[in-house]
Length: 372
Image (cartoon, rainbow, N blue to C red; front, side, top):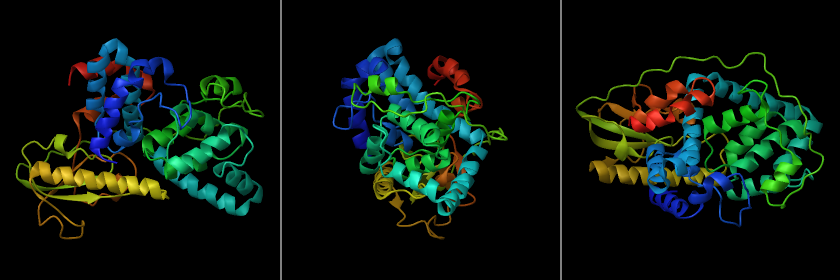
């Protein structure tokens, strides 16, 4: 999991599936076939590649019209981060509900049996079981398969959505707190209240090119409801880095230190904070560690400074600590007190448009791209 690997993946996409992305992106041909999507999300999730450079590369390759659908999908990731940043209760509520539902698993044998069959791929539902095993084995699922899986989990198996979201976050190599939590809420009908996503057999059959044809799905369920949706909170201001010498703290939400807006700050020491997703599987933890090692190595070379072997009490050498803004999630929860947090222009411009539905941000994409 390195920036170099991400750039190779981007080049392969631009030379291959990118040209047919708008037409083919919903088709899941299986793990043994060439992907119909970019498969860049593990690199974007850790910002080994930035959203801006990926969007720029697509626009340069395909033009504004040809790249429109792909660039819009890149902005979906930005939207989810901005929305969770201004609705942090969606994250804290999810964490609390996961724990509550795990207590139910201990107390309710029937629920536990259904849950275990789901995560082990033993439900008997064609496609769903295959995706469960594929996720655990590879750490990856096609985006359309993720939607089908979540819908079947919630509406056909009647399992609590937070447990499904936790299962994804534990195993996905691109597991992002914002995209994962809010996507599961969207499928359930909670993110956009009353508008849920329903997996239907004919849709699965069509977009898996006949590989799967499940039976027994509940294709006409009601959306889930909640007593009170997460409250909107004002987006906090970013910090201005000092003009003198600083220590730079990297974290898993932003591993492209070369392009951070550090103004006149002079980086003299670099450290890394690795905060894994709760319950992260070994392959996810390994990807996190590899990505951090890559980020630290590039930071040391770029700034010509040393890397602290650990971020103990004295790692800064007495210098003020600057870090990229960590959006709501494990990295933000683990940041030491006193860090000065800088925010990229991409997020500064897009997050204020992400407080409600996606349409407001989507309509602003041409302006956001032109004003950078």
